[in-house]
Image 1 (cartoon, rainbow, N blue to C red):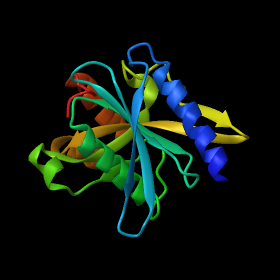
Image 2 (cartoon, rainbow, N blue to C red):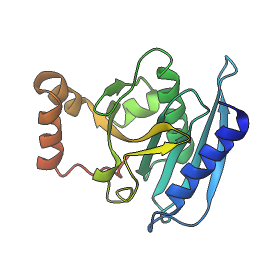
Image 3 (spheres, rainbow, N blue to C red):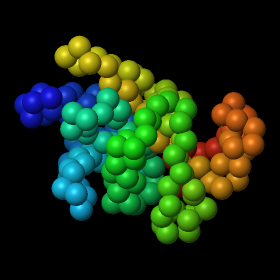
Image 4 (cartoon, rainbow, N blue to C red):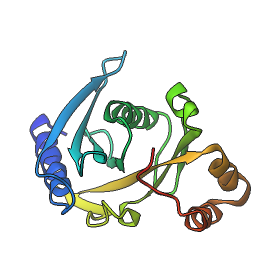
Length: 177
């Protein structure tokens, strides 16, 4: 994908996120580079003083847009999204997948990974489409949802549907980090 096409795609994604009623009308753009020189771009838009929407801006290598609305520190959340994108080099990430992450910051919070869910289950992001087309390519918004060690055990031992039931039964707050 050409650089100008990537810029137009990213502008469309930003426009879609900023069109959410709860999100403020502007966002901050960020760029991270790993030790191999791979660039990851993200944007952060505020919902209020506590909640931010953090999302990836694909650079032509993926059709996934990772997004979350959270009360967590945005710099940490951006690093997590970059780590998720980096994981795509080794594994395909799709709706319903679970990705284990090993980070001291996450371990302190009893978080062992993330699961990728449809954005329409988020009370902040539910106006976004799960998929959209741009220049004959389909792109997917994947809601990044943190999971605890206990939730991982439910998923591992009983499966995806049991984890979704567990979330419902325990009133999982998708905004808390």
